[in-house]
Every structure is written in C-alpha cells, then in structure tokens.
Length: 76
Image 1: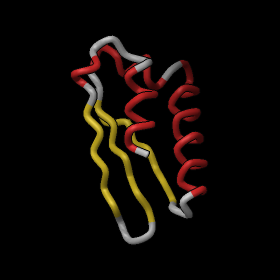
Image 2: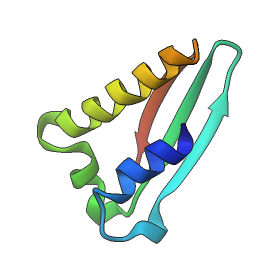
Image 3: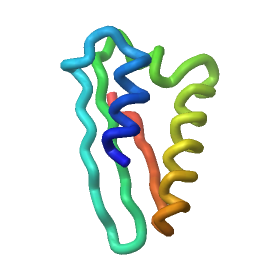
Image 4: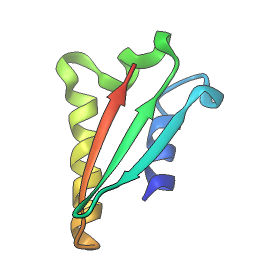
C-alpha cells in the first residue's frame, strides 16, 4: 500500500526526493505520515482539502480490501 501512496504523491509534486512516508502500525490500524517539501504541501492538500480527502478515500478503500483500517496524515 505504501508504494501506491508514494506513486500518487510523486505524481502531484515536482521534488520527488523530498517525499517521506512513515508507516506506524498500531493494534488495529495503519497510519501513514506523509511529508513533502514545504513549498509543495498545497499541491498535495488541494483547494479546501479535496485532494487530501481523495487520497484518504483511496487508501481507506485499499485497506478495506485487506481488512485493515488505514489513515493518512499530512505532516508539515
């Protein structure tokens, strides 16, 4: 799942080397903490958070296929 998330984020930003994805596993869920370059955070979040919400929806549906709860956090 992390590869899919990385692919989505890479297609949104110019500086692909600045992408950092940290996976934190808890007892009942996986949390992905995404960091990108400060100047490109707006591209990932989008107007009124619509792109960020779409990314979260995709990841939640992928997690549901594997019967896991998945959350995506965007860290500045």
